[in-house]
Length: 92
Image (tube, rainbow, N blue to C red; front, top):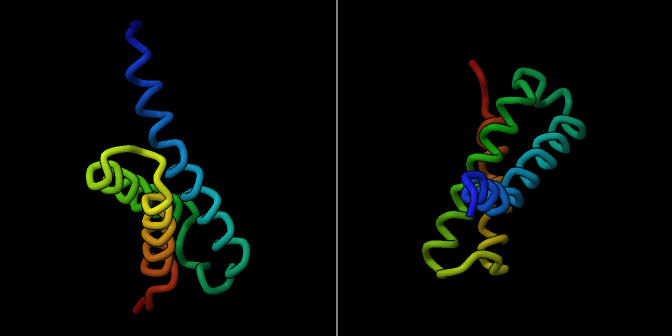
């Protein structure tokens, strides 16, 4: 086992969360351009990826293995809720 093997394992674990977060943030920014005009894409992507990764890790801890549909459902739900909170919050 080389030094990079643990890094690749972690990246492969987090790849679905990062992908869902980036695609979702891009879609929100594209579809609701005016509504999310005050929020940068990087902020949306960071929150979406972070929430998705947290849900993925919680699913891994609760279910005991990665790749369960319940975990992916939780990941998508967490991503959507974070985008709703960050992208569509009222600003004063």
